[in-house]
Length: 101
Image 1 (cartoon, rainbow, N blue to C red):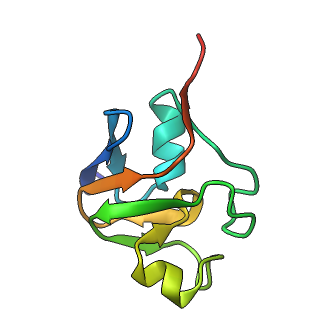
Image 2 (spheres, rainbow, N blue to C red):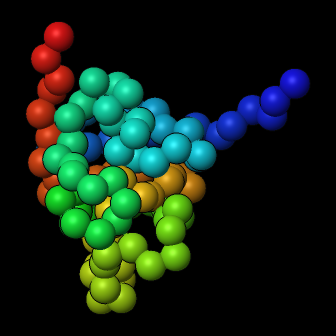
Image 3 (spheres, rainbow, N blue to C red):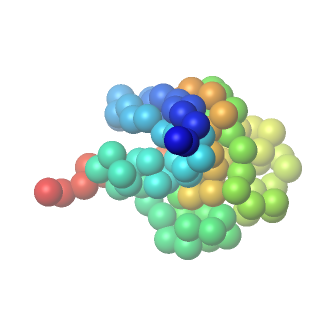
């Protein structure tokens, strides 16, 4: 029997889109799973293609040194490809398109 994994609500302020993300998955993976295409490339926290702003909430990174500076982190800049939610989130300033299909 597996323990229940906590899930959080991710709200994209500009588009009004909303999806759930488990605490053990990245925000990018959850968005893609829900048919939302966030801009991405490397998926390892170095290229900064998915860079966006977190207006509200808390995250944890899956890697020790993601490609954001201390100042960017303090301003709420995150990399969804290596970020996992630790609370409900409100994200702004990201590139998004609805998946076709």
